[in-house]
Length: 294
Image (cartoon, rainbow, N blue to C red; front, side, top):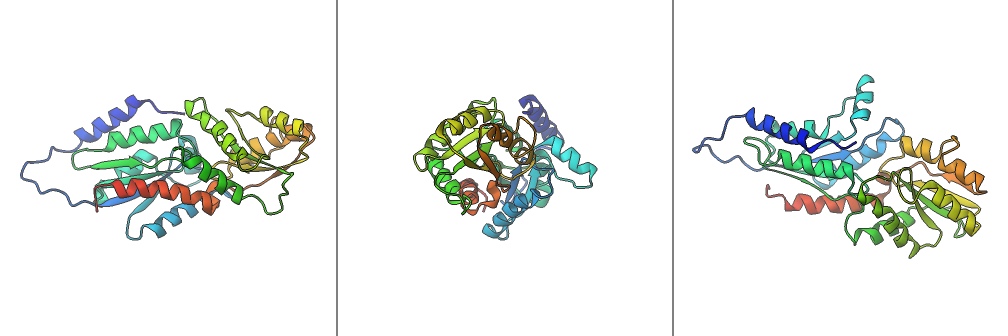
């Protein structure tokens, strides 16, 4: 759920008022850059290593640069905290950096589309930028599907990561979240791009367009007998294991079974796919390289 911009503005104001104004004779602070990996988060233990794998990729690509992880979903943070697993929010992760001497930060957005979660990160980064004795610059990297050039590259990366046992007559169904944000149109755009490469590759969403019913009807009409269900999320968490592959009547697997299609769930997310992860890392590089700090 998106946070009101008013909250972010108040947070920035509180931080501004909590530190004294810079004196005119004070020396300019030496620039230091850092990276914050912002993931939605997961409460599924089997899915969490994929996020850590992404963090390790970032650390390997930027030796000597401080790299930290935050979870954007408050509900997930609260549930994990009850289990003794504490993850900072994006605001907490950014607020901790100035005490480490950091002046400029690139935030790696592990979102798939530029929807509400991404908008919240951009607003937060703006609120934290330019604070006295705080961060000079906080910038957010693009999500997976952002520019026109991203779509064919993502499509090729997804197809290259398909299960080896998949036959050309079998469908590949990539399952995203979906949203009421206008960025939901990225999913049908990806569908169009995939069809230019593979006519049996489909996109569907839990809450957006195309819907589960859309893809079930399409596969039935085409006479498809088998479909591999592949999460379009960073990790194969709750949505992948329940909405996509679960036994409930409204899960994608159940709807396909009713349509006469054998469903084969693939429980790995995009953070587990090297070709897809490389696109996120390229987006991070563009943001990190543009930071003024050295």
